[in-house]
Figure 1 (tube, helix red, strand yellow):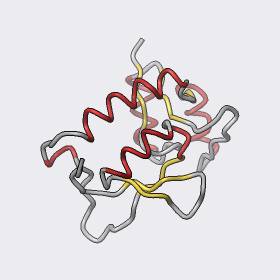
Figure 2 (cartoon, helix red, strand yellow):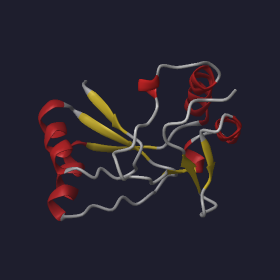
Figure 3 (tube, helix red, strand yellow):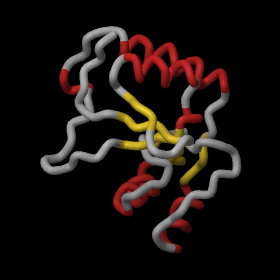
Figure 4 (cartoon, helix red, strand yellow):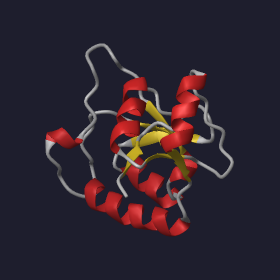
Length: 135
């Protein structure tokens, strides 16, 4: 079975990606912060396409632990510049992510490394673009 994971957003924001998913993959997964999370689609056509090929993935504690170890490896060493989020010219936004998609200790590690900080909402964390780790 061929599948893909859409990241970092919870909702797929691209019609062309949905079309590609319908042609190439058996399923495309979006990571949701909790069971029963409601996805918002911009049209009924997009909702129908997601219904055919899309799946919601709510990470288990074991998956979060495995990801923590992977992120720890990345956040604790120097990486090539290409590994960092590069913003388009004039795009100064931070990227928000639901905090409970990761373990609390993963967010703590990312905050200490200068790669994330709390967002205005208590349920979200902001990714900081283009910053090398400082751990």
